[in-house]
Image 1 (cartoon, rainbow, N blue to C red):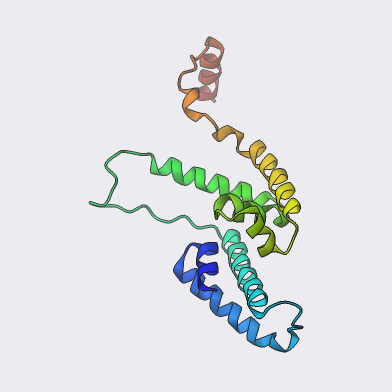
Image 2: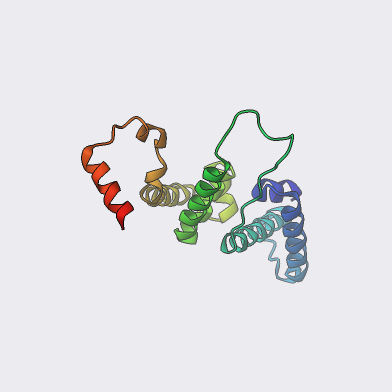
Length: 172
């Protein structure tokens, strides 16, 4: 159960909290266990639900980790501010998706679960996972399309019209 929580949340502290919540929930619901499946399957589902709940709560209050400073900085310069802005834009785009599309996309594309694992975790068919991912990706592509090929824009020559439009904006 620990491995499931850790793989889902990718944060040991969050995973520990989710696991604790899951086992408390399992203890409280033990009388309702119908023995239609194995106990481990039932517990697995409770752990996954606890992790998904924590992910949902975390998305309602998005946070961005502070960059590390000092001698541990990478040698190659990078634009940390742009990376943070991109991360926030992607989080906002994910938050706009309906939960039924967001959960499969997070599990498959972000957390790296297979379609079969995601289907089992969410309790839906594999085809449903695929279709929800496809619909969600299509929506994300529209919202995040401006993030593609940003470096290609640097090679595009600026036209006289664009220069004039820029001057007009500066005057305002």
